[in-house]
Figure 1 (cartoon, rainbow, N blue to C red):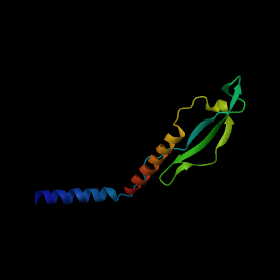
Figure 2 (figure 1 turned 135 degrees about the horizontal axis):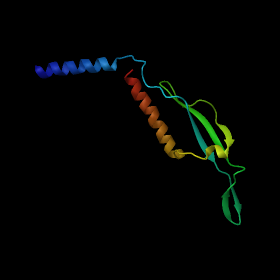
Figure 3 (figure 1 turned 135 degrees about the vertical axis):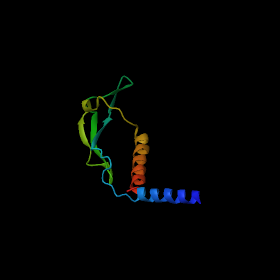
Figure 4 (figure 1 turned 90 degrees about the horizontal axis):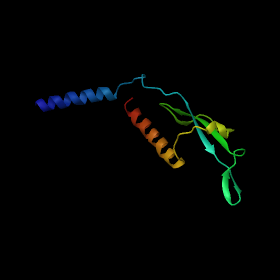
Length: 111
């Protein structure tokens, strides 16, 4: 009998938690992501990066309760704008963004 009462209390607490309609979830501001695009030239059978033709793509991303993804089209900037980039490879970024979307959908279950 004691276990049954404990189980009922646990289920009641869980149901209350899951049914909460809260708007105080953490918000993250839009973030810029920069990606270098290198154009190569060949000189004496060696490849070099052409700094004049290479460029930096800048795109703003939003991670919110209702949307994860780019806010606008990418801007083409001078390559110098990408001089201090830390990021993921295109393949890994796909895995990362898919995880974000799955996590967002999982969080929506609780709201």
